[in-house]
Image 1: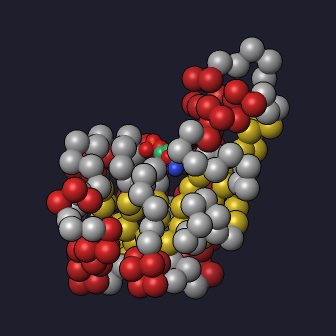
Image 2: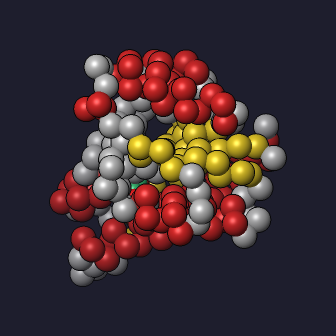
Length: 189
Ligand code: GRF
């Protein structure tokens, strides 16, 4: 079985969907690490609940981004990680990480890329008045939210839906598509 790691900075609902799917044998992989760049991220609680080892390294504790990513690599290397899945990881991956895991770092974004890149994609799309919302799973490249697309899915806007309702629907869709896509990726390679 392949070894996978999840990187997350915040809430961690996608992490939990992945952890549950691994526990239930739906994703056939060992989820060996939850990495976070935030000491108080709620995702760390979720990792405890699933008995997944977690590691926190903050950028602040490092001289620069290169040292930060080298410290992450020092954690990953002995664990023989095959894939890294970003799930609300709020840092751009630089060349240190990307070169160590070419085509092995995957991200989920709550919009139909290449539209609505960035950290406030759902709100931006909502304010724009889009009638079809979507999510994208893509390879991570040096360009923010710019790598090759692996999978997408959509939901239609229902008249009167608040931003909270749209967010809820998008997250539910993310959890399903991320698990499905991870299963597919692991089968292919
Ligand atoms: C998700 O919407 C994901 O697409 C984006 O960040 C959010 C993370 O949510 N990259 P959660 O922490 O998994 O609940």
